[in-house]
Image 1 (tube, one colour):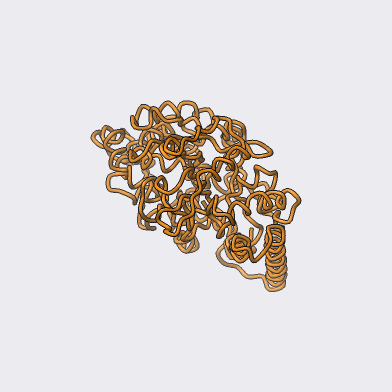
Image 2 (tube, rainbow, N blue to C red):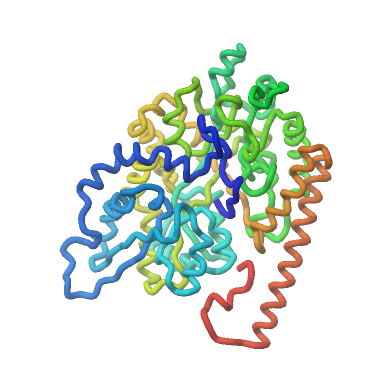
Length: 486
């Protein structure tokens, strides 16, 4: 999830008292999951290299930095055991896990290592935009073509995030998607009916208003709906905008914002009055679910924590049907290959294996409950969750698949230049709408104009740098020749 800051993840987790981060969500259930699904693998762990390889032949070591490894002891052993099929198919190859780049997604920390030629050959994370902008990843398109990989099995809303100018700069590690966690106990106590499984946005808004409570004591307040927005303060995730046919950018890697479109203005006129009335709230400032929230954003990566949630009666619902249909989040989680790897073909083969191998995807489903990148396994994922996480067996896990199976899981689009800074500009406008200092149309229009001006200036600067480079050519590291925003 590229460019995550302090408000990058849902601020509250299931029953959590403090900020709920993605790392914390998986860490909360990591011990249980390893015990349940990884103990067998760890117990029979064997040498990293493929068995029976001839010692006298030269060996190649691929350094792999899977971003989950640093979240708990033992994952390196479990992961190495799980990739044995790749090693057995590639005699003479070893894989070494490197966790030195830090916990979680450390995309920024990997960049200087790539420039220095000291980065892991294959690395993972959820901030692909900065890596693609700087040209730090290897173009995987020729290797995908050579192996005849069917990219249509991946969620289009996620995969498009990795494609720029016809080249493929990363591959999906998993499909992080979303549903809505509904506090059924709160509805029971209020005498309210549960939402229809096929609820739409008008029914949802009515329920959220009915459950919202404002008191003189903040700790007693109840928010109808907590939405997720990870790119800017009070900016909803793009999948909400897509529900109205709008988007924060006109297209992926566009230099133009889409917030001034007619669809975006219509969305803003419906959405922001609910924010102003305290009916819905951005996760960055929202109270904790479930105590003070009727309906809250639920990310698939939070499932280990939801499995431990027993304080109230609750269940999952799909996202409501917006004017253009239901929609859900599509994650940024990726595998990529360093542009300075010494073994590009082998590293690319490993990255492709990680996102296409059926056995590996089944391992991750069982070990960490992640949604596999291949849509062919999504039905199996629903069954696996119930089998390996018994507390979730009776829950509506299918709600996470409702939108993806309709091709309606959406990622936030990147901008052409310095995408994180472009999104940061929006944080100057959205809170003013919520505070009533800007009307919804004026707020989104002002944000779009600010982003467009920023992107135009960045484009001019990039053009000037390119022109100067042509006038004064120099040799050096290949990355130095990549223009800003490429």
